[in-house]
Image (cartoon, rainbow, N blue to C red):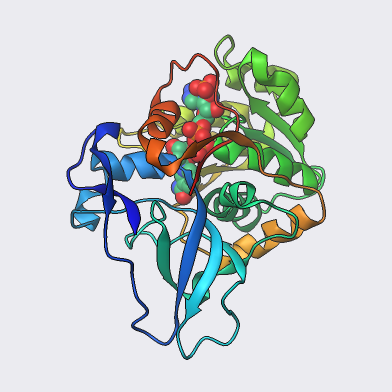
Length: 320
Ligand SMILES: NC(=O)c1ccc[n+]([C@@H]2O[C@H](COP(=O)([O-])OP(=O)(O)OC[C@H]3O[C@@H](n4cnc5c(N)ncnc54)[C@H](OP(=O)(O)O)[C@@H]3O)[C@@H](O)[C@H]2O)c1
């Protein structure tokens, strides 16, 4: 089968199109899936450049989203059969989705939402599980709460705005001026241009110093230590980003803040909730661009290049 193989860590140029053996079912709980679309996440380029080198043996096939068709099932698999349309996030540390076929355990699979194309479905699994974990499981976001979601135009942000809105929250987000209309259309109540303004100060001013109930840190830097200045007393900060440098959390103490650190593990149960919101028409995938698998180097260049001509809006998808 064709696959994108990483034999050495480095820039996008290490993503090589190769012919590799098609995986075969060796366990009764396994399922072989024909990958119709995958998507690109920051995790993919972090793996590619070697950030998780201690967890992998080269060569690697990366990729953390699959939308495709079940091709064959192990003898113990009862729920799935060839022809079923599925979407899921491959187990972190195992073979990824930048390949024509993917072998997985039946427990990882979810039925693809009705009326979504493969490319739309591939935009959901990793960010879907993450968004449910951060907003619902950790922050316990509820109707009437206020939430700040920086990075509103990103893969996580475009879905998080919609899910927060469906839960009845008032949503602050950040995005470049040219994207503001689209972010309001997704359900944001206040959009702050982070290239022109300090969004922590803007939220402070907008809430008249009261702050918001929940802040989601999708951008890192000093967001963890700055967040309490825009956080309500007893508010919650959820961070998705690994932050190497020490942070001063004295303001967090003054706010009686609660911090949650999220590193998403593949979770079919959390994806089911997102499937429900998609089928109810409350959430839709936002696709920035679609690249053929063979053009994956340019897809990585687009997600990594912070000085893009056209700003990112939603997910970059790979079609097969
Ligand atoms: N822990 C987990 O389990 C988990 C799961 C998923 C994602 N993540 C992490 O979450 C982060 C976001 O993921 P993603 O898929 O949404 O990435 P993405 O699609 O690349 O989007 C990033 C967004 O953040 C914006 N941004 C960058 N710097 C900013 C800043 N200083 N202030 C405000 N906005 C800023 C960008 O806007 P511009 O284009 O204007 O720069 C872009 O819209 C990544 O670091 C990723 O690794 C973690």
